[in-house]
Length: 341
Image (cartoon, rainbow, N blue to C red; front, side, top):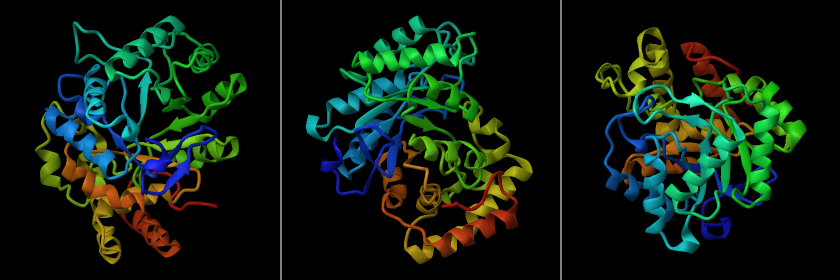
């Protein structure tokens, strides 16, 4: 799907030839259960329906990764793509560099940047997704196998030259690694975590991306459900052990209490705009000038509708100031609290 096939606002994605909607469909949770960072069981039919619905309402990109469900998320995305007319298919972004052990599927994957490994991963992702070219291919986490950022980044650039991928990016990389990669060839995009709770990248990575014309798609803008306005302490306590959130400090103790207080403070603002807390939380990340768009997950069509307003919601300076005050008052999270222009 190009920007011409959506009625939703789009933004140019860094220096790429893509213009993307301000929100994209995140396919982490639809990977299902049985791996290290799972969200628990998922209905594959509901996942396909969610992706199809997202495309129907105008969202023009999907973000997934090979490791989500150990290949399963990419397979589900591929299945959904086959059910969408070719001229309406969203851009497909995926990530590699995490190698899992099929004999021990719940073990943490290894972070591998070796060129031959990356090339095998790209071929496997192309096959699972059922596409001839990946629109954006990203290194999921910094490599820990001894491969330098310069060596692995040259492999990414080569894959782009060869036409296997359309654009190349880094996920979860800091300014030092971004700078070293940029010296080899342009970093098209960065995918960092960012929400009104987890704000640290606003201090260094966002300014770097703005300076280098690197597009930014942020993940977990609702902090994995905490900023939906529907999450509760009782729900956090009931999370199953196979849901990674049950082990996160954001979902337990004092951290949980502060985060839920911030979500509560967003409710009057959401009511004024006639929208959901979820949409306000996502729109807050989009108020930062360096942020191109936000990745938002959904397990079914109704969840897409819960945050779709973020694609068009523009927070006023007063709104942003109100949220900054709420962050400071509740003590939620860490990092800068107000966008700078």
